[in-house]
Length: 114
Image 1 (cartoon, helix red, strand yellow):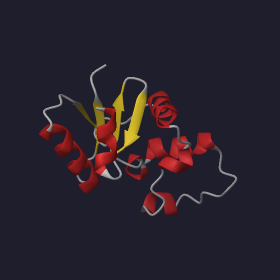
Image 2 (cartoon, one colour):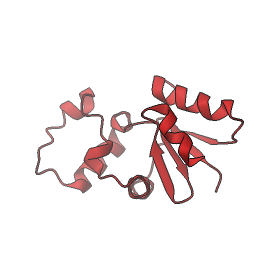
Image 3 (cartoon, helix red, strand yellow):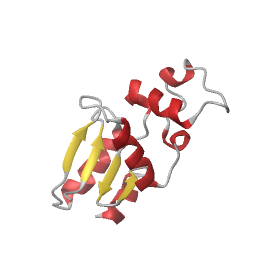
């Protein structure tokens, strides 16, 4: 599987992570998930590869999250649906290689996969 980055070009961490990868001459597939939204199954797969739950992958300070009335009782499935409806709240970038994935926060963290 070719390495893949789930990228938002408006995000400085995402841009920096992509630049670090490209500077090393690594051929990587760029998925702009704001333009090409993730499917629920793909989001679940990425969470599994990251070893995270949905709450761990949410940017809680985004307006879309704050207005969603999420509580401690909100189910993982409801959180997944919220991320699919508002992909801006998904932490980024995510770098995926085969059965592993890493968040590029800090950007250098993703390099250990490559």
